Image (cartoon, rainbow, N blue to C red; front, side, top):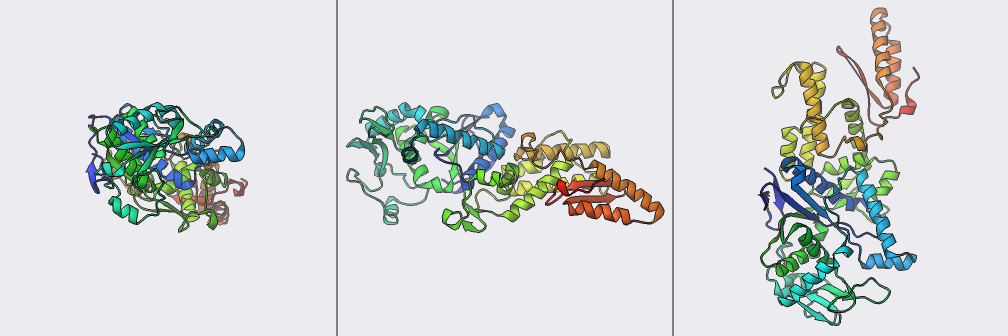
Length: 475
């Protein structure tokens, strides 16, 4: 049973798919004119994790996830004018960048990734329906949605229309009947993208895109709509209004999920503060995508998160250790406690706590500090293997320790010979009572950032925090 906090109803609700056994989810995607910054990446990781959970619970074939690309926008037009490049070249290139950067974070591709320019026809049809039903009006080549025609406007953000007007600086165009009315269609000049419409040559407003694409791919009503909290108003509020008015028999989205914003080292990310980073910036600085993802998962999606170098260093050390410990393991099934944590309003921070606990239990069982674990039957060896398999499956449910994300941890460096050498040195020292060679080798390994574990059952050498293979001693 999956429970999610519904922003619209302001309570936690059990996910009950409209079509039993099948889940449909829409998440607002990027406007493709530049690299995605690390704030843009947070909803990608959040909803990728939810996508993985839904696929685990309902089966991969029973989950449909749609995330759009906005490829018609004034920012794109401005970039084309400034560079002299064709708009399609810019959007194609940016989508390629986006895919590469999100792939590096371990994000799965959604089921559908519609481009707005491929759905102009459905947008025009929806606008025509809104006009026919008295919810929109055309003037001077523009079409605007009449906000006061929808009594439920403001329900998502919890504000009345009058309060919104009083609390905001709204530029009132002369063709607007009300300051809150928003654009569905606008005219285009010869040097801007445009399409023929009943209101003349023009292009869609931003908000109508998601309403039209979600209806085409998911239907008039679907299960989950997600995005960053910055989209709650006006984008999502406007989506609800136009979708419910264009499709009176539908409810648009049953559950609304919003992730909170991201800071950097305790401050709002800003170019003026010098703390503005794209995902590509971090990757090129040497942060593995898996490490970036781990940092995101440490904070519950509904809380503001803070990207810090210290968190990244700790995440890297943990992932190095886990990759070394579970290198030759095959995944089993995700542990029930990890699945339960994710099912409780996508509590990734708790899921990581459970994952750490599972790793500790595995380590203790393997070293003989625990005789048996009640939930696992069989011999100690079988239990060790079972715990390891469940740990790996649990990590991969979170998008961690995936084979395609490996390599960065210098897995090609085999530390087994160092463990063997240390074990042999210890055996000789036990006879000679001279442990200087043991201490010297152990100190050299520690200086290289390796973690040395010596117990009655044997010797292990694992990559630790700040591991640097170039500093390993020569055997």
